[in-house]
Amino acid sequence: MNIYLLLMFEFFKTGLFAIGGGPATIPFLSEMCDKYGWFTHEELTTMIAVSETTPGPVGVNMATYVGYTTAGIAGGLLATLSLVFPSVVIICVIAKFMASFRDNKFVNDAFATIRPAVAALIATAVAGLIQDAFFRTGADGKWTVLIAPVILFAIIFILLQFKKLKKIHPVFWFAGAAVAGIVFKM
Image (cartoon, rainbow, N blue to C red; front, side, top):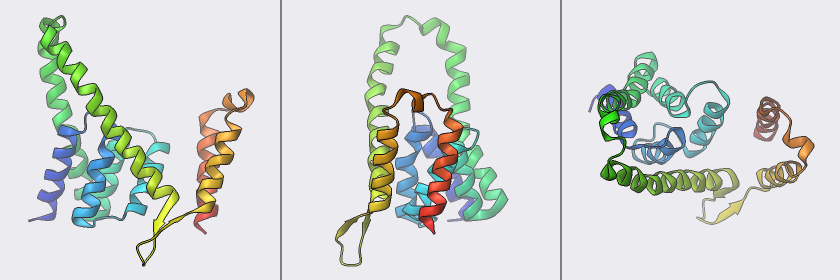
């Protein structure tokens, strides 16, 4: 299949079913990683980190990155538009009819049913990120714990228990995380 059609299909599907925003796209991206090899799980972790620190929705940033690295500028545009298109259509339809369904029991029940699914998608994404950040599988198939990220996580977790440090602007935490990522990557 043509790479552009494949990108459009995969990101349209992701945009259609990843209810809950950027973090909900991560399981779909992980599946693309395994299915097509467009990027590695380590690159996915890097994409998530970069997408979280740059302006804009995480899912859109990641779609642009994957599309661009896979098929250039056209791929980046197609992947991004394909991801966003289902949401735009759904939002337009819902906006048109929402006022008449605002107090509808079935609509409220449907949203109540969707919430656990969104939570499960996000929990799956978090579990995958933890696995990619803290563990590696060796050639023998055995898991090894990556000590540096675990120690860094523990240090940051402990630091965030102090009220004064919680008041530090998130930009400084992102900058610190970027520096730590660069240092540990060397």
